[in-house]
Amino acid sequence: MSFLQSKAILVVAILGLLGIMGGIVYYASLDIPELELMEIKLDNVELIDVNSIENKVKLRTTFLVKNPSEKTFTVATIVYDLFVNGKSIGAGAYSTADIAMPGRAAFYPGSEIPLKNIFELILTDTNAQEYQSIIEGESLQYSVKGIVTVETAWSLIEKEFESSLE
Image 1 (cartoon, rainbow, N blue to C red):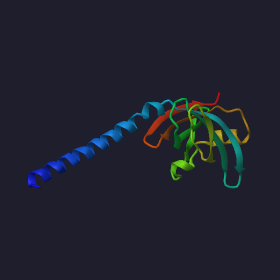
Image 2 (image 1 turned 90 degrees about the horizontal axis):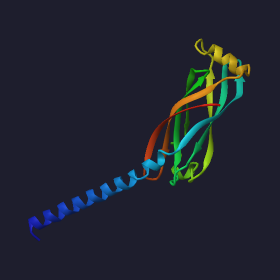
Image 3 (image 1 turned 30 degrees about the horizontal axis):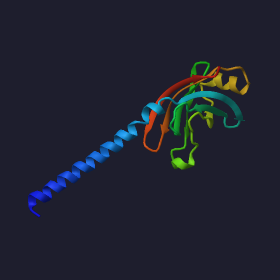
């Protein structure tokens, strides 16, 4: 085999490899429109613990995630800011990023699953009124703004969302 023949074989092999990689990227991009159909909303915020010694409360936030698409996906993270009566009281996060995809909740087509998270609020000068309203059980308007990360075996998207309790 001559030097030119071996170079030609090498070029063909590299082009073939690049073609395969391009095909994988193209195939993965087919999931993105389906993933963008996912819906998330704030379903509930519940006071679960008041620690008057450390001036800290624990709230259970529940997000309802719906899959109206034909693709099965998982939720890796939900990063959000929680608001009470329009005022931000802090940031929270739901994460299963450290769990392998087979161990996470699978959102099959047409499914709707609640995801629960613990949000800790520490009393400060800036949130004193909201903190007091929460521990006294007053009627409050909760809302969130955040980003949810949704994954399939081939694709990953980050989608912004806003939701409030009705």
